Length: 319
Image (tube, rainbow, N blue to C red; front, top):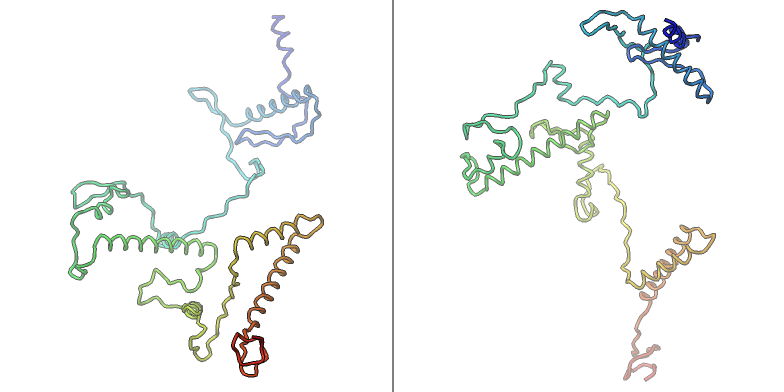
């Protein structure tokens, strides 16, 4: 009995000698203590023990029930006040905008149903995969014989036509996906893009689309519409001029780069200003050489000519 009393006296009380200033989240069994601590390891262990005892006391205060495996407590539901607010490393993800089909399905109360992986193929009288290389659609292109309609061109390859139709359908679907992304961001597709949902006869273009189509038609010729006849009140779209780069030999390019590097390598020199200065000097020299070529003429000695003539000329030139 004496040994039991000594062992019991070594345990601390279940009621800590400390103020209960913890913040509890009993749904997640978390207790938070914001009291600052010193770097004393003994003090840290005592505080951790007391806080753990307070958390255990809160657990025993919850409603409990007896089960086959023992006594179980019922944890409270999480609420905005009781939940522990932890800082996030990344911002909350934005809500994904709904596509046109999702909005339509929501308005019509259409529930999405999972389709089976296999479908029935009437050609083979068997179940085949819905997607993949062994699907019924891909097997159609591998067939040695393909049925043709009376209106089909007999000289046209039906397999190539089928592949082109599939490629066109994929391109249209890609355009619809891009449109959904643009509309989900609160914008609209750029003008000049046709409405793929409408029929060919009913694809009407608005004012902005017509302006964009007119602007593109003006620059569709080889001269960018420079020699085209303008309509009354037509606004001419100016096109940016492209800078012409003169042909340059390997030695000339090497000398030019050496000049730029020699100027940049100097201390306390602005690199951009040095490069612009070299380019200015080269353009100036090129314009001077071009002017010399255009002004140089070969004067022939004629009758009464004062220039330097060829041998046998009748002028006063040297023979």
